[in-house]
Image 1: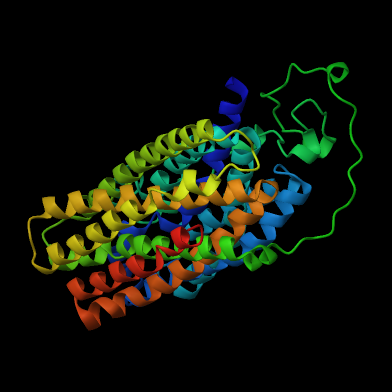
Image 2 (image 1 turned 30 degrees about the vertical axis):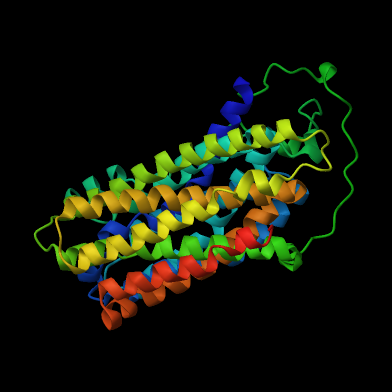
Length: 432
Protein backbone atom coordinates (compact mmCIF):
# COMPACT_ATOMS: atom_id res chain seq x y z
CA UNK A 1 0.00 0.00 0.00
CA UNK A 2 2.95 2.34 0.61
CA UNK A 3 4.14 2.26 -3.01
CA UNK A 4 0.71 3.19 -4.50
CA UNK A 5 0.41 6.04 -2.02
CA UNK A 6 3.81 7.39 -3.04
CA UNK A 7 2.84 7.12 -6.71
CA UNK A 8 -0.46 8.82 -5.97
CA UNK A 9 1.18 11.74 -4.19
CA UNK A 10 3.70 12.23 -6.97
CA UNK A 11 1.00 12.21 -9.66
CA UNK A 12 -1.15 14.57 -7.58
CA UNK A 13 1.75 17.00 -7.39
CA UNK A 14 2.16 16.88 -11.16
CA UNK A 15 -1.55 17.27 -11.86
CA UNK A 16 -1.63 20.44 -9.77
CA UNK A 17 0.61 22.21 -12.31
CA UNK A 18 -2.27 22.76 -14.73
CA UNK A 19 -4.88 24.40 -12.44
CA UNK A 20 -2.16 26.20 -10.53
CA UNK A 21 -0.67 27.84 -13.61
CA UNK A 22 -4.17 28.72 -14.86
CA UNK A 23 -5.61 30.25 -11.69
CA UNK A 24 -2.79 31.48 -9.49
CA UNK A 25 -3.02 35.16 -10.40
CA UNK A 26 -6.75 35.53 -9.90
CA UNK A 27 -6.17 37.54 -6.69
CA UNK A 28 -3.79 39.82 -8.60
CA UNK A 29 -6.08 40.72 -11.51
CA UNK A 30 -6.59 44.31 -10.24
CA UNK A 31 -2.81 44.68 -9.97
CA UNK A 32 -2.31 43.29 -13.48
CA UNK A 33 -4.84 45.80 -14.81
CA UNK A 34 -2.77 48.64 -13.37
CA UNK A 35 0.62 47.13 -14.28
CA UNK A 36 -0.22 46.51 -17.95
CA UNK A 37 -2.60 49.49 -18.21
CA UNK A 38 -5.27 47.27 -19.77
CA UNK A 39 -8.95 46.71 -19.08
CA UNK A 40 -10.25 43.93 -16.86
CA UNK A 41 -11.65 42.17 -19.94
CA UNK A 42 -8.24 42.07 -21.63
CA UNK A 43 -6.52 40.72 -18.53
CA UNK A 44 -9.20 38.04 -18.15
CA UNK A 45 -8.62 37.19 -21.80
CA UNK A 46 -5.30 35.69 -20.70
CA UNK A 47 -7.27 33.34 -18.43
CA UNK A 48 -9.74 32.52 -21.20
CA UNK A 49 -7.04 31.78 -23.77
CA UNK A 50 -5.19 29.59 -21.28
CA UNK A 51 -8.30 27.50 -20.68
CA UNK A 52 -9.09 27.16 -24.40
CA UNK A 53 -5.61 25.94 -25.27
CA UNK A 54 -5.59 23.58 -22.30
CA UNK A 55 -8.84 21.99 -23.40
CA UNK A 56 -7.75 21.54 -27.02
CA UNK A 57 -4.25 20.22 -26.31
CA UNK A 58 -5.48 17.82 -23.60
CA UNK A 59 -7.24 15.80 -26.33
CA UNK A 60 -3.88 14.99 -27.85
CA UNK A 61 -2.17 14.21 -24.55
CA UNK A 62 -5.04 12.05 -23.26
CA UNK A 63 -4.95 9.49 -26.06
CA UNK A 64 -1.14 9.54 -26.09
CA UNK A 65 -1.01 8.66 -22.39
CA UNK A 66 -3.57 5.86 -22.78
CA UNK A 67 -1.73 4.36 -25.76
CA UNK A 68 1.95 4.71 -24.93
CA UNK A 69 2.17 5.05 -21.16
CA UNK A 70 1.83 7.54 -18.36
CA UNK A 71 5.51 8.24 -18.06
CA UNK A 72 6.91 8.94 -21.50
CA UNK A 73 9.85 11.05 -22.57
CA UNK A 74 7.38 13.53 -24.04
CA UNK A 75 5.85 14.10 -20.61
CA UNK A 76 9.18 15.15 -19.14
CA UNK A 77 9.61 17.51 -22.09
CA UNK A 78 6.19 18.99 -21.30
CA UNK A 79 7.25 19.71 -17.73
CA UNK A 80 10.47 21.34 -18.88
CA UNK A 81 8.67 23.63 -21.33
CA UNK A 82 6.01 24.38 -18.72
CA UNK A 83 8.72 25.48 -16.30
CA UNK A 84 10.33 27.66 -18.97
CA UNK A 85 6.99 29.27 -19.80
CA UNK A 86 6.45 30.07 -16.11
CA UNK A 87 9.84 31.77 -15.95
CA UNK A 88 9.06 33.66 -19.16
CA UNK A 89 5.77 34.90 -17.71
CA UNK A 90 7.54 36.09 -14.59
CA UNK A 91 9.97 38.13 -16.68
CA UNK A 92 7.41 39.58 -19.12
CA UNK A 93 7.73 43.39 -19.39
CA UNK A 94 4.53 45.18 -18.44
CA UNK A 95 4.56 47.07 -21.75
CA UNK A 96 4.24 43.84 -23.77
CA UNK A 97 0.70 42.59 -23.25
CA UNK A 98 0.89 40.49 -26.42
CA UNK A 99 3.79 38.53 -24.93
CA UNK A 100 1.79 37.83 -21.77
CA UNK A 101 -1.09 36.51 -23.87
CA UNK A 102 1.20 34.38 -26.04
CA UNK A 103 3.03 32.84 -23.09
CA UNK A 104 -0.25 31.98 -21.37
CA UNK A 105 -1.31 30.04 -24.48
CA UNK A 106 2.10 28.41 -24.76
CA UNK A 107 1.98 27.48 -21.09
CA UNK A 108 -1.45 25.87 -21.48
CA UNK A 109 -0.33 23.52 -24.27
CA UNK A 110 2.32 21.90 -22.08
CA UNK A 111 0.46 21.98 -18.79
CA UNK A 112 -2.50 20.04 -20.24
CA UNK A 113 -0.58 16.75 -20.09
CA UNK A 114 -0.38 16.95 -16.30
CA UNK A 115 -4.16 16.58 -15.97
CA UNK A 116 -4.19 13.38 -18.01
CA UNK A 117 -1.20 11.91 -16.22
CA UNK A 118 -2.85 12.47 -12.85
CA UNK A 119 -6.10 10.79 -13.91
CA UNK A 120 -4.23 7.93 -15.51
CA UNK A 121 -2.17 7.18 -12.42
CA UNK A 122 -5.28 7.46 -10.28
CA UNK A 123 -7.10 4.81 -12.29
CA UNK A 124 -4.07 2.51 -12.52
CA UNK A 125 -3.46 2.25 -8.78
CA UNK A 126 -7.04 2.34 -7.42
CA UNK A 127 -9.85 -0.23 -7.43
CA UNK A 128 -13.41 0.81 -8.18
CA UNK A 129 -14.46 0.44 -4.53
CA UNK A 130 -11.88 3.02 -3.40
CA UNK A 131 -11.64 5.22 -6.49
CA UNK A 132 -13.90 7.99 -5.17
CA UNK A 133 -11.75 8.39 -2.07
CA UNK A 134 -8.60 8.58 -4.15
CA UNK A 135 -10.21 11.11 -6.48
CA UNK A 136 -11.26 13.24 -3.51
CA UNK A 137 -7.74 13.28 -2.12
CA UNK A 138 -6.43 13.95 -5.63
CA UNK A 139 -8.70 16.99 -5.93
CA UNK A 140 -7.35 18.38 -2.68
CA UNK A 141 -3.86 18.37 -4.14
CA UNK A 142 -4.84 19.89 -7.48
CA UNK A 143 -7.66 22.35 -6.84
CA UNK A 144 -6.44 23.64 -3.47
CA UNK A 145 -3.02 24.44 -4.88
CA UNK A 146 -4.80 26.50 -7.50
CA UNK A 147 -6.91 28.53 -5.07
CA UNK A 148 -5.09 28.60 -1.76
CA UNK A 149 -3.88 32.19 -1.20
CA UNK A 150 -0.99 31.16 1.04
CA UNK A 151 0.95 30.91 -2.23
CA UNK A 152 -0.18 34.02 -4.04
CA UNK A 153 -1.37 36.66 -1.61
CA UNK A 154 1.83 37.03 0.46
CA UNK A 155 4.04 37.30 -2.63
CA UNK A 156 1.92 40.07 -4.08
CA UNK A 157 2.60 42.46 -1.23
CA UNK A 158 6.37 41.83 -1.10
CA UNK A 159 8.15 41.56 -4.49
CA UNK A 160 5.19 42.02 -6.90
CA UNK A 161 2.93 39.92 -9.10
CA UNK A 162 5.80 38.48 -11.13
CA UNK A 163 6.72 35.98 -8.39
CA UNK A 164 3.32 34.32 -8.74
CA UNK A 165 4.52 32.17 -11.63
CA UNK A 166 8.29 32.21 -11.15
CA UNK A 167 8.21 30.24 -7.88
CA UNK A 168 6.62 27.23 -9.59
CA UNK A 169 9.11 26.73 -12.40
CA UNK A 170 11.19 24.11 -10.60
CA UNK A 171 8.91 21.13 -9.85
CA UNK A 172 11.18 18.11 -10.51
CA UNK A 173 8.80 15.32 -9.57
CA UNK A 174 9.01 13.61 -12.98
CA UNK A 175 12.44 12.33 -12.01
CA UNK A 176 10.83 9.94 -9.51
CA UNK A 177 7.51 9.00 -11.13
CA UNK A 178 7.32 5.34 -12.34
CA UNK A 179 5.25 3.85 -15.16
CA UNK A 180 1.87 2.32 -14.18
CA UNK A 181 -0.06 1.74 -17.43
CA UNK A 182 -1.26 -1.87 -17.37
CA UNK A 183 -0.39 -2.64 -21.00
CA UNK A 184 3.20 -1.61 -20.28
CA UNK A 185 3.91 -2.97 -16.78
CA UNK A 186 0.96 -5.30 -16.16
CA UNK A 187 0.21 -5.44 -12.46
CA UNK A 188 3.64 -4.05 -11.68
CA UNK A 189 5.53 -7.30 -12.21
CA UNK A 190 6.48 -6.59 -15.84
CA UNK A 191 9.78 -4.84 -16.44
CA UNK A 192 9.07 -1.93 -18.83
CA UNK A 193 11.32 -0.77 -21.67
CA UNK A 194 14.21 1.48 -20.71
CA UNK A 195 12.49 4.63 -21.94
CA UNK A 196 9.89 4.21 -19.18
CA UNK A 197 12.41 4.08 -16.34
CA UNK A 198 12.38 7.04 -13.92
CA UNK A 199 15.56 9.06 -13.72
CA UNK A 200 15.82 8.29 -10.00
CA UNK A 201 14.18 4.87 -9.37
CA UNK A 202 13.08 5.47 -5.78
CA UNK A 203 9.91 3.37 -6.18
CA UNK A 204 10.59 -0.28 -6.99
CA UNK A 205 14.37 0.15 -7.03
CA UNK A 206 14.87 -3.14 -5.18
CA UNK A 207 13.04 -5.21 -7.83
CA UNK A 208 15.40 -7.50 -9.69
CA UNK A 209 15.01 -8.56 -13.30
CA UNK A 210 14.84 -12.20 -12.26
CA UNK A 211 11.73 -11.50 -10.19
CA UNK A 212 9.75 -9.89 -12.98
CA UNK A 213 7.59 -11.25 -15.75
CA UNK A 214 9.07 -11.39 -19.24
CA UNK A 215 8.77 -8.16 -21.14
CA UNK A 216 5.70 -8.28 -23.41
CA UNK A 217 5.62 -7.33 -27.06
CA UNK A 218 3.87 -4.00 -27.53
CA UNK A 219 2.05 -3.58 -30.85
CA UNK A 220 2.18 -0.04 -32.13
CA UNK A 221 -1.31 1.34 -31.73
CA UNK A 222 -3.01 3.71 -34.10
CA UNK A 223 -3.60 7.17 -32.71
CA UNK A 224 -7.15 7.03 -31.35
CA UNK A 225 -9.47 10.01 -31.51
CA UNK A 226 -10.79 10.69 -27.99
CA UNK A 227 -13.65 12.76 -29.43
CA UNK A 228 -15.38 9.47 -30.25
CA UNK A 229 -16.17 9.16 -26.56
CA UNK A 230 -18.54 12.11 -26.97
CA UNK A 231 -20.74 9.92 -29.19
CA UNK A 232 -21.80 7.97 -26.09
CA UNK A 233 -24.98 9.70 -24.92
CA UNK A 234 -24.41 8.97 -21.23
CA UNK A 235 -20.84 10.26 -21.36
CA UNK A 236 -21.89 13.39 -23.27
CA UNK A 237 -24.61 14.20 -20.72
CA UNK A 238 -22.19 13.76 -17.84
CA UNK A 239 -19.57 15.94 -19.52
CA UNK A 240 -22.05 18.74 -20.22
CA UNK A 241 -23.44 18.62 -16.68
CA UNK A 242 -19.95 18.69 -15.19
CA UNK A 243 -18.93 21.46 -17.57
CA UNK A 244 -21.77 23.76 -16.58
CA UNK A 245 -21.12 23.29 -12.86
CA UNK A 246 -17.42 23.96 -13.46
CA UNK A 247 -18.12 27.06 -15.56
CA UNK A 248 -20.36 28.57 -12.88
CA UNK A 249 -17.75 27.79 -10.23
CA UNK A 250 -15.08 29.36 -12.41
CA UNK A 251 -17.25 32.41 -13.05
CA UNK A 252 -17.62 32.96 -9.31
CA UNK A 253 -13.93 32.50 -8.49
CA UNK A 254 -12.68 34.50 -11.49
CA UNK A 255 -14.75 37.51 -10.44
CA UNK A 256 -13.96 37.44 -6.71
CA UNK A 257 -11.06 39.87 -6.93
CA UNK A 258 -12.79 42.45 -9.15
CA UNK A 259 -16.17 42.24 -7.38
CA UNK A 260 -14.67 42.46 -3.90
CA UNK A 261 -12.32 45.24 -4.98
CA UNK A 262 -15.30 47.27 -6.20
CA UNK A 263 -17.65 46.40 -3.32
CA UNK A 264 -15.13 46.62 -0.47
CA UNK A 265 -12.43 49.08 -1.62
CA UNK A 266 -10.92 49.19 1.86
CA UNK A 267 -9.50 45.67 1.43
CA UNK A 268 -5.78 45.41 0.78
CA UNK A 269 -4.44 43.08 -1.88
CA UNK A 270 -3.33 40.54 0.72
CA UNK A 271 -6.76 40.65 2.39
CA UNK A 272 -8.37 40.23 -1.00
CA UNK A 273 -6.24 37.17 -1.61
CA UNK A 274 -7.27 35.71 1.73
CA UNK A 275 -10.87 35.58 0.51
CA UNK A 276 -9.74 32.72 -1.74
CA UNK A 277 -8.81 30.78 1.39
CA UNK A 278 -12.47 29.94 1.99
CA UNK A 279 -12.77 28.51 -1.52
CA UNK A 280 -9.76 26.30 -0.86
CA UNK A 281 -11.18 25.27 2.50
CA UNK A 282 -14.48 24.34 0.88
CA UNK A 283 -12.65 22.27 -1.71
CA UNK A 284 -10.81 20.36 1.02
CA UNK A 285 -13.97 19.50 2.95
CA UNK A 286 -15.97 18.81 -0.22
CA UNK A 287 -13.32 16.45 -1.60
CA UNK A 288 -13.08 14.49 1.62
CA UNK A 289 -16.86 14.39 2.09
CA UNK A 290 -17.63 13.31 -1.46
CA UNK A 291 -14.90 10.66 -1.56
CA UNK A 292 -15.92 9.02 1.70
CA UNK A 293 -19.65 9.13 0.96
CA UNK A 294 -19.28 7.76 -2.57
CA UNK A 295 -17.10 4.88 -1.39
CA UNK A 296 -19.60 4.12 1.37
CA UNK A 297 -22.53 4.19 -1.06
CA UNK A 298 -20.63 1.89 -3.40
CA UNK A 299 -20.09 -0.65 -0.62
CA UNK A 300 -23.73 -0.37 0.46
CA UNK A 301 -25.05 -1.02 -3.04
CA UNK A 302 -22.43 -3.71 -3.57
CA UNK A 303 -23.78 -5.72 -0.66
CA UNK A 304 -27.26 -5.78 -2.19
CA UNK A 305 -26.10 -7.17 -5.55
CA UNK A 306 -24.91 -10.71 -6.17
CA UNK A 307 -23.39 -10.39 -9.65
CA UNK A 308 -21.16 -7.86 -11.35
CA UNK A 309 -23.37 -7.76 -14.45
CA UNK A 310 -26.35 -6.44 -12.49
CA UNK A 311 -24.39 -3.96 -10.40
CA UNK A 312 -25.91 -0.45 -10.83
CA UNK A 313 -22.77 1.67 -10.67
CA UNK A 314 -24.79 4.75 -11.68
CA UNK A 315 -27.07 4.35 -8.68
CA UNK A 316 -24.09 4.21 -6.35
CA UNK A 317 -22.60 7.40 -7.80
CA UNK A 318 -25.28 9.93 -8.81
CA UNK A 319 -28.06 9.57 -6.24
CA UNK A 320 -26.65 12.46 -4.17
CA UNK A 321 -26.40 14.84 -7.13
CA UNK A 322 -29.87 16.50 -6.78
CA UNK A 323 -29.19 17.47 -3.16
CA UNK A 324 -25.70 18.73 -3.92
CA UNK A 325 -26.89 20.76 -6.91
CA UNK A 326 -29.66 22.35 -4.85
CA UNK A 327 -27.13 23.47 -2.23
CA UNK A 328 -24.79 24.75 -4.96
CA UNK A 329 -27.50 26.85 -6.62
CA UNK A 330 -28.63 28.23 -3.25
CA UNK A 331 -25.07 29.20 -2.32
CA UNK A 332 -24.52 31.00 -5.64
CA UNK A 333 -27.75 32.98 -5.37
CA UNK A 334 -27.15 33.85 -1.71
CA UNK A 335 -23.61 34.98 -2.53
CA UNK A 336 -24.95 37.20 -5.31
CA UNK A 337 -27.50 39.05 -3.22
CA UNK A 338 -25.13 39.47 -0.27
CA UNK A 339 -22.75 41.32 -2.57
CA UNK A 340 -25.58 43.30 -4.13
CA UNK A 341 -26.76 44.43 -0.67
CA UNK A 342 -23.18 45.04 0.55
CA UNK A 343 -23.69 42.91 3.65
CA UNK A 344 -20.98 42.04 6.13
CA UNK A 345 -18.10 40.29 4.42
CA UNK A 346 -18.35 37.36 6.87
CA UNK A 347 -21.54 36.20 5.15
CA UNK A 348 -19.83 36.21 1.77
CA UNK A 349 -16.93 34.21 3.13
CA UNK A 350 -19.30 31.53 4.46
CA UNK A 351 -21.16 31.33 1.15
CA UNK A 352 -17.88 31.03 -0.76
CA UNK A 353 -17.05 28.11 1.50
CA UNK A 354 -20.32 26.48 0.43
CA UNK A 355 -19.67 27.16 -3.25
CA UNK A 356 -16.24 25.54 -3.08
CA UNK A 357 -17.45 22.58 -1.00
CA UNK A 358 -20.45 21.62 -3.11
CA UNK A 359 -18.97 22.35 -6.54
CA UNK A 360 -15.97 20.06 -6.03
CA UNK A 361 -18.27 17.37 -4.60
CA UNK A 362 -20.46 17.45 -7.72
CA UNK A 363 -17.48 17.49 -10.09
CA UNK A 364 -15.78 14.59 -8.30
CA UNK A 365 -19.03 12.63 -8.31
CA UNK A 366 -19.40 12.94 -12.08
CA UNK A 367 -15.69 12.37 -12.74
CA UNK A 368 -15.69 9.18 -10.66
CA UNK A 369 -18.66 7.80 -12.58
CA UNK A 370 -17.01 8.53 -15.94
CA UNK A 371 -13.83 6.74 -14.85
CA UNK A 372 -15.95 3.77 -13.75
CA UNK A 373 -17.81 3.64 -17.07
CA UNK A 374 -14.69 3.69 -19.29
CA UNK A 375 -11.78 2.37 -17.18
CA UNK A 376 -9.68 1.47 -20.24
CA UNK A 377 -9.36 5.10 -21.37
CA UNK A 378 -9.01 7.09 -18.18
CA UNK A 379 -6.67 9.72 -19.56
CA UNK A 380 -8.81 10.11 -22.69
CA UNK A 381 -12.06 10.54 -20.77
CA UNK A 382 -10.31 13.06 -18.54
CA UNK A 383 -9.13 14.88 -21.66
CA UNK A 384 -12.71 15.06 -22.95
CA UNK A 385 -13.83 16.31 -19.56
CA UNK A 386 -11.10 18.93 -19.61
CA UNK A 387 -12.06 19.99 -23.14
CA UNK A 388 -15.74 20.49 -22.32
CA UNK A 389 -15.29 22.19 -18.98
CA UNK A 390 -12.38 24.34 -20.20
CA UNK A 391 -14.43 25.48 -23.17
CA UNK A 392 -17.46 26.32 -21.05
CA UNK A 393 -15.26 27.84 -18.34
CA UNK A 394 -13.43 29.99 -20.87
CA UNK A 395 -16.73 31.23 -22.23
CA UNK A 396 -17.89 32.04 -18.72
CA UNK A 397 -14.72 33.99 -17.88
CA UNK A 398 -15.04 35.99 -21.10
CA UNK A 399 -18.67 37.02 -20.45
CA UNK A 400 -18.75 37.30 -16.65
CA UNK A 401 -17.56 40.92 -16.52
CA UNK A 402 -19.96 42.19 -19.23
CA UNK A 403 -22.71 40.18 -17.53
CA UNK A 404 -21.98 41.83 -14.18
CA UNK A 405 -21.93 45.27 -15.80
CA UNK A 406 -25.18 44.70 -17.71
CA UNK A 407 -27.33 42.91 -15.13
CA UNK A 408 -25.71 43.88 -11.86
CA UNK A 409 -24.18 41.48 -9.37
CA UNK A 410 -27.42 40.07 -7.98
CA UNK A 411 -29.15 39.22 -11.25
CA UNK A 412 -25.92 38.06 -12.91
CA UNK A 413 -25.25 35.38 -10.31
CA UNK A 414 -28.95 34.53 -10.21
CA UNK A 415 -28.61 33.76 -13.91
CA UNK A 416 -25.58 31.55 -13.22
CA UNK A 417 -27.45 29.68 -10.52
CA UNK A 418 -30.33 29.14 -12.92
CA UNK A 419 -27.95 27.59 -15.46
CA UNK A 420 -26.80 25.05 -12.88
CA UNK A 421 -30.37 24.29 -11.86
CA UNK A 422 -31.44 23.63 -15.46
CA UNK A 423 -28.43 21.71 -16.73
CA UNK A 424 -27.39 19.80 -13.62
CA UNK A 425 -30.23 17.22 -13.55
CA UNK A 426 -29.08 15.85 -16.91
CA UNK A 427 -26.60 13.59 -15.18
CA UNK A 428 -29.45 12.16 -13.08
CA UNK A 429 -32.03 11.86 -15.89
CA UNK A 430 -29.58 9.96 -18.09
CA UNK A 431 -29.71 7.07 -15.61
CA UNK A 432 -33.32 7.36 -14.49
